[in-house]
Length: 86
Image (tube, rainbow, N blue to C red; front, side, top):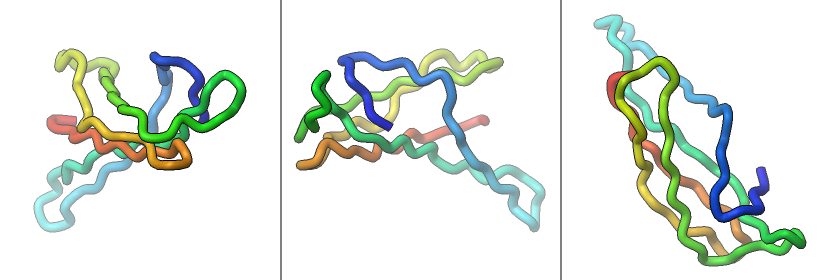
């Protein structure tokens, strides 16, 4: 996924979950967002701060903020978003 703006809105994210086979309760797992940050000409944006905020549909939690990160030398990033009560 390439992004070319200071602020990008993702309409969809895929998150997986598991259920504890012993208790039947959901196991909370983080959502991990990965991508590559590019400029308008397709050049990578190295060592740039990345901040992700998300909101779950049909939940009253409001916006949640992920653990901030930084792009690597090639503009790639991996951001961990803890999730609770999902």
